[in-house]
Image (cartoon, rainbow, N blue to C red):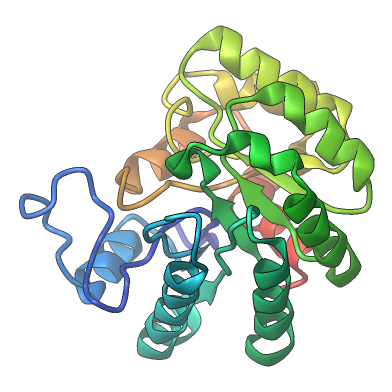
Amino acid sequence: MNEQIIDSHIHPPLADGTISTWFPGRASVVSGEDFVTHLKQAGVKRACGACIGPMPGDSFAPIAEANRSALTFRDQFGDFYIPAVQLDLRLGQESCGELDHYYHNEGVRWIGELVLYQAGGEDDYTSKGAFEVYALAQQLGVPVNFHCNKLHLIPQMCEGFDRLNFVLAHPKSDKAQFLQRLELVRKYPNLYMDLSGSGLQRYGLLRHAIDTAGEHKFLFGSDFPICGAAGFVADVRSEQLTARQQELVFAGNFKRLTGLG
């Protein structure tokens, strides 16, 4: 298989060597080199996603350090890694400054995955700080990849910033949850879904998703190193997709949203 596969949802190690795997010390991925090797062995040609560090809520310093770590990873592995910026929507002014800098000076064209649930703040997706960030992201044309279980917040986001592309992380394994998410993706032209995390292993899920919401709405992702990447590649290949649909999921939709070749 020679198709291009871009993993839109990974979390590179921090510069101090911290890797966000479930089983530290037992996983075979213990370095940046191992990280990239795993993805390449799965067939991934390029990968994108933000580093994740502590989110204490009263300081932007850990977020800034995570973003510096992303640049370190990019400098080490070149074109394989497409850097993304991490933000804290509770700190809107600082996040806007970070986004503006990374967009204009580092060529970043992807926000997130934003993980406000780790700080107990999913309601902050519709906070004043969040709206400040969305307004700037909409102006710059940078998609927002976000983890959100409070689905009632999403219409306010998509309707309030209808020229901003939001990418909802994870289909979810539970059928009812997946169908709720899929209905939102179908309804809002500016809402997409990445296929990382749980759900893609449910055979027929991707075929049903494309039939319901369209082939342009879904992006390949793994959530590596929380999840291994090879199974996600196999799951996409095993679905009854056309060659065009498979190409769009694996790379085309991400490239269109980011403007990256």
